[in-house]
Amino acid sequence: MWPTALKLLGGSLLTLALVWALVLGWWQSNDYEPSKLDLGLYLVALPLALVGGYLLLRGFIDHLKSPSAPSLPAAPVLRDDDPLVLATAKSEAAERSFMIGVIDGFVVTSAGGAADETLSATEEGKRPEPSARLTDESGFPVFLAEVPDLDVDATIERSLNHALPLGDLSAHEQIMRSLSLLERLLDMVNDRLPESLERVGVSPTLRVALVVPATWKSMDLTAIKAWLQAGVPALSEQNTPDISIVPVSNELEAMQVLDEINLRINRDPSSQELTLLLGVVSGVDEQSVAQRLSGNRLFTSEHQERQIPGEGGVALLLAGKTLIDRCRLENCAMISRVSMGSRDKPVDAGGRVSGKLIGQLTAGLLDVTGIEHSAIKTALLDTDHRANNLMEALDGLGQDFDHLDPVKDCLAIGASTGDLSPIGGLVALACAKVRVLATEAPALCISNQHHLGRAALLALPVPIEAEANPHSI
Image 1: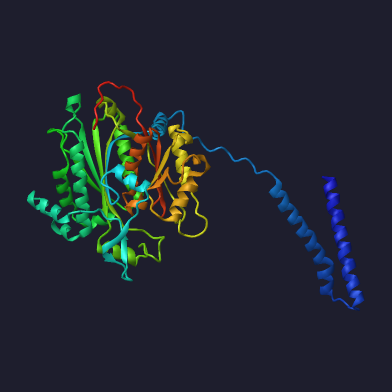
Image 2: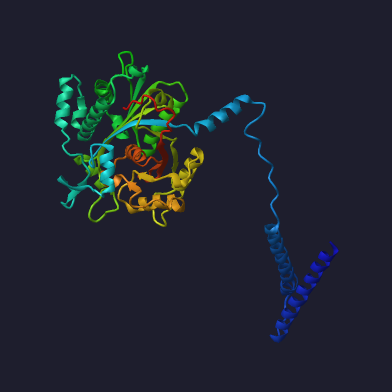
């Protein structure tokens, strides 16, 4: 203590002497006669200010150098005397590792009438072409990814023949084109789905969830539900399908629907439920194109960083592992829980494009599933041709996925199908199932087409537990 005090006193006296010498010398050289105020300011206040400033600065520096006091440990989240809390925590930890089986996947896009055709078109670099019927404000053809030979009039006629009135829906081209796409999907489902699974001693229940754009909320969805009930197959006379229509605003909400199905089926290990997840969207009509143009979101020759309107549909037949094993179903793939997050700013906001969020989502999936980076052979994206979105995905994969070829193994489905928001992630998942079966290795499915929302999941082969008497769907 005393050495510190002596140093402080000595430093203060030295400062006082230097200030007095300089001030008095300056006054003498200028023959200046100081007033009482000058004497107080220069000979008293100035030395004290210098000494005080030094002490404050020294104290601030010492404060920065000193280690911070350890904070008190937070109260434990789990208490030994609360078994209900412990059970909840264990349940949540177990649910993070839930998986669900994709028995089959059906896709209709401008790139092909099946998931493997759409995937092949992406691999071959097929791109949307200029439209022969729509033009932009400059008179140039608009690039569209529209499904060829889509007969909307035939869909309306068949609906009337089956006494399924569509009401005001028939006046909306995008909805009628979507229903035509849905009709194609249901035809494929009916062709592939067996009339019953009773031949293997199982009579499953069927749930149907139709994902549609949020703009449909203002429409009368009762007519669509009645139309859907007539087209969805019943697995048995006793099991009438439970049908719901879910309007969603973006890809994240669509992936959330998939995740909720995963949770519902896995929470009942003995579940005999099959879920048919459907999604349709069409944005190639004149009104939809005009809305994109007015919102500065339409791809043109001058603005190639914008979106190309597309249309398409997807159907995923989902079941739990218990039902898959019991029925000895082949050609299936398992999918993990969906890992989701939101960017701080859009990828087009300027500055460096970072894939940090995608990297975090991917790392979390691999950590939960215990799969090594090197085991992943494919990354399927729902994004389109836009360079920033592709750069974000590749940056997110990073050095851990250097074994993936950016051209052959990292495929952007939207580059061939156009913008399929909000179902683009589901379409990419159906294509991921094809790659899983082809490579017999896990595939990473990433949704990064939305300006902020990001989602990721893993698709992987079904572990074979028994090989006797297999049946295919």
